[in-house]
Image (cartoon, rainbow, N blue to C red; front, top):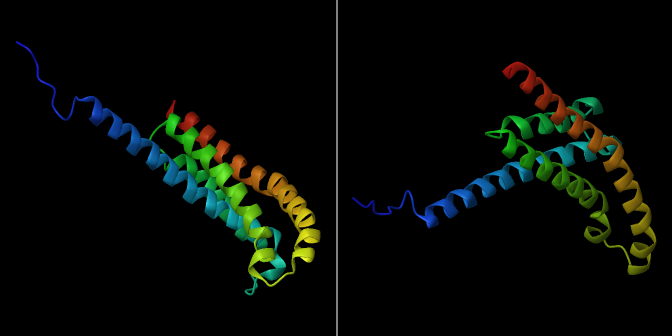
Amino acid sequence: MTETATEWTGDSAQGNIRRRYWLSALAKGVVTGAIGGIGAFTYNMSELMVAPIDPLLVLGITALAGVYAHLLADGLHESIRVGLIGFFTGGITMVGVWVAPLWILSYTNGARDLLLPQLTGTAVTAAIIVYSSVFLGAYLSALTIDAYAST
């Protein structure tokens, strides 16, 4: 007796499952990364905060984003994908937010050309030192604790 292919066993259904899996990992990574990047930017530019909040509490948002990058994933493979996507998205978000006032405010082209290298260098340095250490540290800590707890 031959078995007919149904929607559940066809190649197109497998492609849809893979597409949804990647879109899910991409969405989780982008959201956690953007939240972590904004948190790290706010920590670095704490003098711009209006409310008298301790900057370490704001840095905790970046750490929570790293933890959630692991906790939101369904398995280890997705966790690694979400963590990597979140890490790079957060770094790009942080640098982008840091440099964005050059185009949002009315700077002249000459002033923008002079300020862009300095702001970009400062933003990349802060992203490497603050964001990467906090986000990756929290992500890898959550990964280690989860691996230890599951054995």
